[in-house]
Image (cartoon, rainbow, N blue to C red; front, side, top):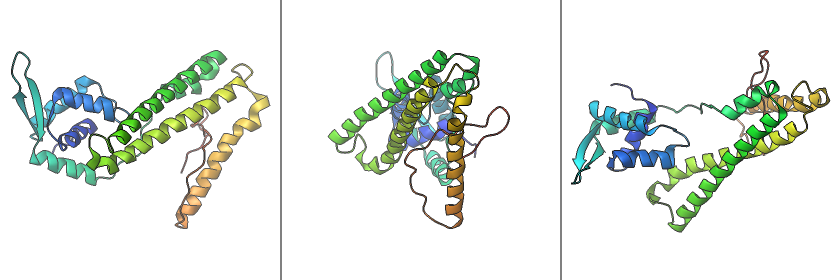
Length: 241
């Protein structure tokens, strides 16, 4: 069987709920899935057509008038492909974070540049949390949202998004206090011990995780991570276990 892209499997998942028009599919992705699957509408339309070509979905013209809409429905082969994909364990997130990249090279800019980037991240986090609050009110008011029978699975992703946005917000607030203490963007000898602490916390966290994993112990939620940095330009750094 031809292997689909993640976008294709996501559309199969939506079609497993019920039939959607092409426009409705894009709206569902942009409203609900865009936080874990950011895709341009053109990619979604192309992926839907590809499902039909592979026999995983059907399409029909629905409605009357000058602009009939194309409605997609999943086929038995599409349902089988979706089940096969779900049987494969998922992987961890792949992060592309423009602001973090700019902060990584902040010593080639100015202190004000770094602070402006951090403020932009805080605005993003505020927007995410505001969206989550509005969605939460909708789900509470309707006792489960548009698909109350799926509340148990929706809750998993909603909790991830809340925690992710909160973590980014806390990290940005922490980063702002650090940058405000800089003296320019060059070497900061007055902060050396303080800056090294993020790597100390990373090393301790990794050691704890490895030890508890070896002994089969439960690892409790960390109250609040320090921002352990990425591998630096010399190849040193830390990785969370």
